[in-house]
Image 1 (cartoon, rainbow, N blue to C red):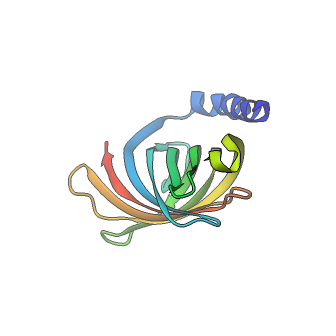
Image 2: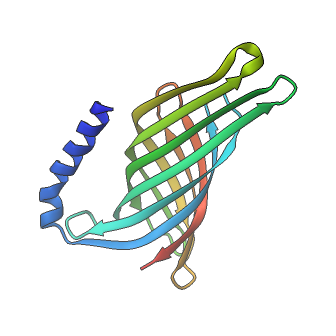
Image 3: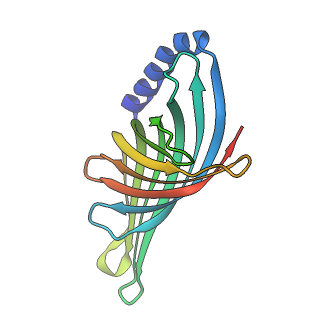
Length: 181
């Protein structure tokens, strides 16, 4: 946990001079649904929220996206009185490069995220009352997607994202709506 705190403090301190000098523009917010396929598990659903930020100091088609994502997966075997759950709260920063082809706006990018992964198991008949294990992992990710032509201030998108979390690699299919400012 100390390592995570030091990492976040270093990122915050290193970004102070950039933020003080740059003209930052928040261009929109996106809400998304996710289909998550984690290594060794079946697919399940998650949620996400992110902001879209540009700056006069960045290349024209580059957008920064601070992101928060959350998913929870549970399994119950009632015949054996076994319950298992795993969840991941993710805070990250992605950068994407956007292209324009008429009304199509494809993009690609990547970023870095901190994953707080927690697993629980309850199997009283097998002698495990409540077992819990938590991990904090920092991992890179890659993404590619397509924004469709906006309808007024509303923007829809579809993207794929892969998080390189050690022992918990995650493939995500994200889709959602955004509001353009």
